[in-house]
Length: 553
RNA sequence: GCGCCUGUAGCUCAGUUGGAUAGAGCAACUGCCUUCUAAGCAGUAGGUCAUGGGUUCGAAUCCCUUCAGGCGCGCCA
Image 1 (cartoon, rainbow, N blue to C red):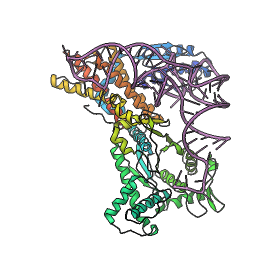
Image 2 (spheres, helix red, strand yellow; image 1 turned 135 degrees about the vertical axis):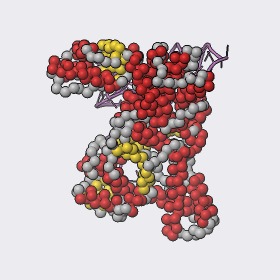
Image 3 (cartoon, rainbow, N blue to C red; image 1 turned 90 degrees about the vertical axis):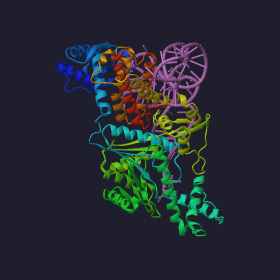
Image 4 (cartoon, chains in turn green, orange; image 1 turned 30 degrees about the horizontal axis):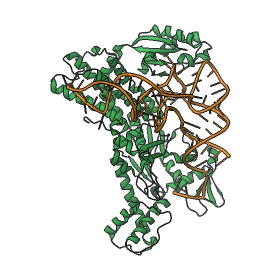
């Protein structure tokens, strides 16, 4: 749809180039109008080039339109409107052919090749393995997953990665917490670490260790057996996290361990590289990275006075490692509270000669969890929080994901568990799924009632689809590729969510007004074909979001 | 103090990267089930796009001011 218009316009410009004194063909933007009164698609080209041509936009549009009309094309009519809009309306036949093509090619019709031969990496969730995932992680997981599906469908070679912070003091603190509970449970009443993790999962792990190893570590000091507790604890947590994510419908291609970066010498290697490039210097007995020369506010310490690496040091190694793996684009989903970290990572990438703009951080804003409109207090340290697991169990994975995907990632989100659950009947995810299920049901009825009532695309005459509602529905179908392309370029999955709701709305409306199965066989067959088309697009969109498309509800 | 994000209908949020008369869902009100799933449909009502200026053919969108909320500014991770 988009391409035909762009081709038509650029052909027209070729005819006018001399007259206009243009050396190049300007970028042609086309948009889908809000109202059907403005045609199927329109361009604002005349207005945007008016200045450089020093001509009034309407005059330009007139000349353009005259040239456009000389061409053969799939258009029924053109319209010059407002300050210089040119509206295009396609012939019905164009949409009948498009529908035929969709039914023949099915899902492959809806994909693009924007990302062909390009490798893209997307890192998301990456929660510390020191406790269960909470709702905020769930949001990142839903967005990251949808984005991965979308990019893969756009032809990119996508790698989904989870970065595990298994080397720092946080996992050690987790180990200490479990160690202390273990001692206490067996009667050794030592004090609990001041900043220790206090969730009930700490006791669960301690309990597990008692069952497995008995009192083997009883009365041992943390120096003696701390490694065991730390390793056992974070590995348990990591396994739990992976399971939660799986049950949420999310998988990763790669789990990158921070510890491994140290063990393989990648931290020292990457720092050596920076040193060779003269980006490191010593001051006050510490080693600094001069990130200010790449636009950061201040230089950053990589090796502390006491000789230990900072967290930033392993992050340098991690990002260097990503670069070495050869991606065209690197995407990271971070909690919005980490936004201050962006300039220094940008500095690192630039120091390693990664092209600017090829690294993109998507910030995931906090989720305020509510129950009956009242905020639920959350504190990870105190162990008071509602886990992602509980939310999935209570409201369901599909609903949870869909709600996360109806917002821009960087805007605050209120998630009321009771609303999501109790009003589930009016939840937008069901609205979309219901449209899909209804179509499935129609096909079930059709095959039961009439043996030959199917969507037979080879024999059907689609031109009997003349109702305005039918044409609106068909047209909506072919907006999907444009919406999808916009989603890919902007990395904004929620655009698909909104599109699906609009498509479902048109379908429900159509369904209530017109019967698909009737005594009129040619009409029935054509309408079944239309339904099939809607079903394919709904299924494709839901698949992108990582939400199921049930046959029955 | 500096930086980033946010402010759109009673509530929760979209707004196609500057386009035409600002949209949806919820909540409210009025109707629609002997016919393919009523988890649905049709309709009514709801707005100083926080504020004040600027940029231009055109601003919710870009720039500046002010106000309000959130987050970040460690040799912590």
